[in-house]
Length: 67
Image (cartoon, rainbow, N blue to C red; front, side, top):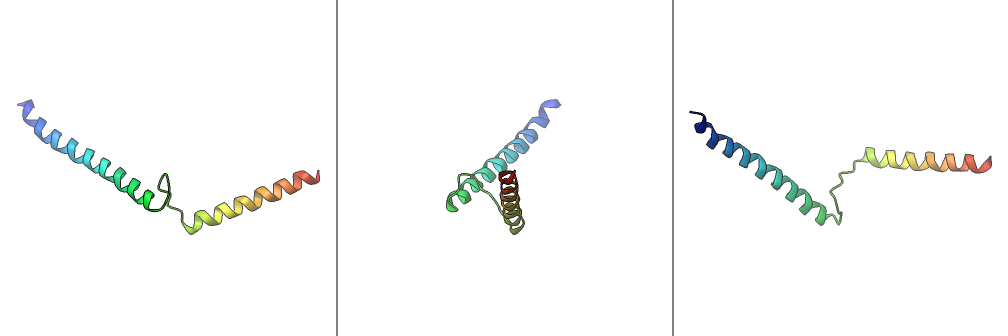
């Protein structure tokens, strides 16, 4: 019977929903502990790329100011 599948689908749907809600709640909780509005996981690579971008922008601004 087709209706016999429904309890299994409900259990699976509830499990995935709880996982998603729980993951979001943990992210918000950890972001609040880090004084962030949204959890941002920055690595050394990200910091190096940000520094490089700032240097390149400053170099471009200095070059444009000369001309």
